[in-house]
Image (cartoon, rainbow, N blue to C red; front, side, top):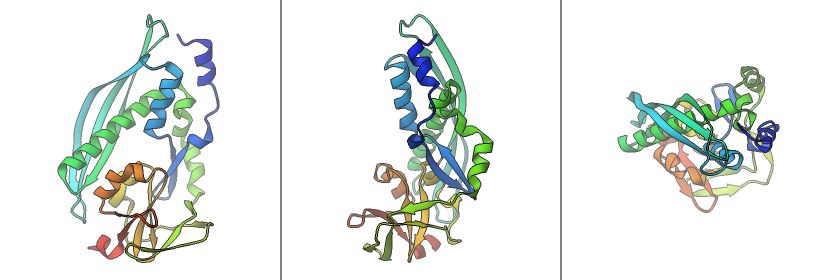
Length: 240
């Protein structure tokens, strides 16, 4: 159904610059971001030549953590249809995705969980069309290979007091998460490819496109410091 150019592009090796990573326990997981997947589909199949439909979206759990944040999990089933250039033939695929919303308000937690579940379902459905949509990233042997890797943050900044920061020289240093918080506390941020590290008396959000993900970060109680361009949260606030 696909033309020669589309088949050629689908067979290309996945560009490593598109691959992001996040920590889950002691494992480093590789993934492609949702906007990247959609952009790739538009480039390969063409605008208007593919579409998706949410066939199922339901809440599967709800609870509160120690910080009184609402944690709401959603399940989504998405069906994707791809047409040929003449719109005479089509292929349909379907898969399931899950998402977790963590926020102070129920509305924000519902929104985050539902959106994340739909995005996950779209990514999982499109992966059936090959490596350009990250199919190889689901290889468990690849994930196990990443277990020995540590998260390294480059060009970090040292926090001294809330909203007062001292910039460090540009260098790479390995950050180890401490026992004052657990990945479950900030599951929504880890699912976005972000990580939480301790610096001084604060927790810091690190990762790509941090400002674009500000709504999710703010929902977890972090504050933005314009001078240092960092999202921070005092550790004593975290422990409260």
